[in-house]
Image 1: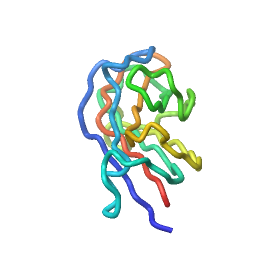
Image 2: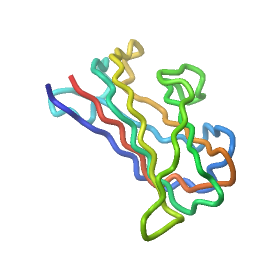
Image 3: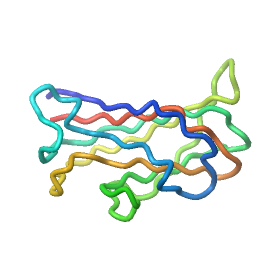
Length: 135
């Protein structure tokens, strides 16, 4: 089994209590595998989603939604929440990890997923996100 990952480090400020499709992180799955070409049908087992945030303002929980479309309507992973693990030395930075273990075939052939994030209260800056998968 090979394990691959894709990351997006685009900093996105003012993530609040509702999903905003304009603030989604785009992930190209096949781009992480040296034997695959972007745009080919993706086949693999989605492993984990790691989310790093900064500028935490009263948020204690993150909720994510992983979709195959930019509008957030075609869910691969429906809404799931996790507590923020805040930094040991910097309480305004934190992370959340979501385990998936879902076999997935992207029948659209676009090999892209959109990660949307919201908080339970206040706001955060989405600092980075990563998706791991295996084949």
